[in-house]
Image (tube, rainbow, N blue to C red; front, side, top):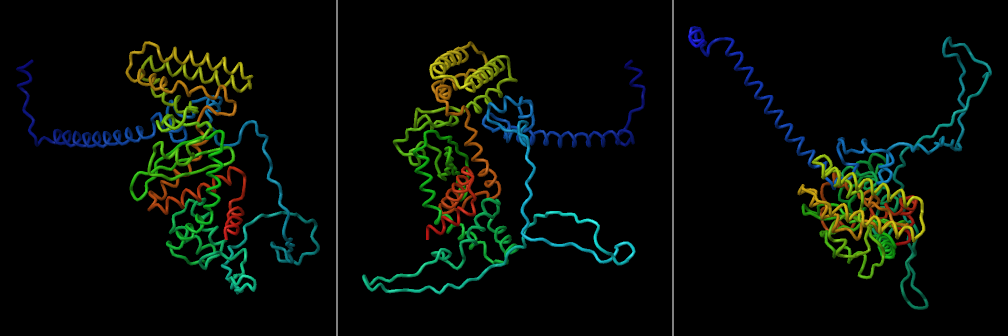
Length: 457
């Protein structure tokens, strides 16, 4: 064999076939390098979106994604499907009453041009449309000043549409604020919208100053929301990062049944809770596992949605992970089914004791995997707070209310990138608080803002 092989003529590097194969080899190497780079990027993206603290709405499609859960599981975790609910019968949009009537007639045939007589029938169609953008209305106020004959003090006449500062009226401030915060627009785009829609020419700096005025005029209402939050018996609390002048800050949310408060702070610590809620807060807090919450109060309900998401991360790793994840899901389903029946207090207490024993048995099992052991320790550290909802019918077992409240800020964060300074922090927290609270109470933001502006003046 050796002699036969050595008998073949040696191919030189100039052989066309060898050159062709070498070129093909280089192309394949380039493709593999490009594919490896793509895999690295996708793995980074996966790590960003697929972790225990990623809410379901942000997760990428996978075996753990929302689509793989049953509808009953999503309902129990407080997750909502998009689109119309199956139990909703649906309502046809009611026809509006017309403001005017236009008679549509034709004198000549559109086919041959002959003159037409009386119509054979009349069809009625009601069309709803948006009026043309309204131009700026310029009003001159002649404001009388008086000297009181009794006390000698000067009295200045007032008017409900006369703002305390500036040359732009309340409606201009309202529309600017709504474009900026409800329309998720940056100052420059808000400026363009005002000019396009109303012919109102402003600078970006003026747009910012109008939102500052809105914040100042709404601040008394913001302080009232703070008082309502402090008196709440139940709060759903969460926080997410938001940069301020390039530094890491935090937007906190406190959600009650009738109010939503946002507080922008540079800290994620317990001191924010003490500042916002006070030292004598007596209510219960539903939260994730961040250490500031148990440091502030023992009246806690830990979020099961966070717990189960973290358990799901262990499920595919090994048998230990699958065991603890499956058992936690089974226990959660059992407990939520139980409370849906609205049992009496004695049954609730008994169920809580049983569930606590089941949790202790689960976390004290002989696990071999380090990740599962760490997770079991985390469950044990919160053992006093997983089951609060069983004996408190008004409590929800998840913190989805607070997470939903923060979603708008996550969107705004992507648009604006960073807040500039403390003034921007104050404006953001004030306006976003009032918009969310009005929405919570089914109130019209335009009407409420105008009312509060006039009351402030």
